[in-house]
Structure formats: structure tokens, C-alpha cells
Length: 65
Image (cartoon, rainbow, N blue to C red; front, side):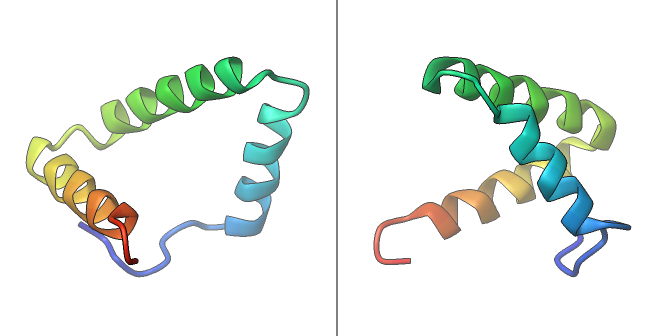
């Protein structure tokens, strides 16, 4: 799992992500996020890396973080 910044243009991607959510309801935005996660997971493809990413995301989302 890569833990250092690996995006070629992180700022542009962040803008695109925000724009993609523009005008959506909360439910639509959550569906967009879910679909995006599945598309990106498919691009990664490695089950071990995906498990590490899930664990890292869960850890950072835990209360007290």
C-alpha cells in the first residue's frame, strides 16, 4: 500500500471530486462515493492491498482520531 502522495495532480483531482458531487442530494452523493470506491478498487485489483487500505481508512475514521 502506498502511503506517500502518489497522485500526479492531487489538487485537480480534488476539484473534480467536489464538482462531481455538485447539485447531488446526500443520497446521490453517497451512491457516487460507493460507485467510485468500487471502480477504484477494481483498478487496484490486489486483494491484499485493498485490505490494507480498508484497515488504514477504518483506523483513521475511528473515534478519537
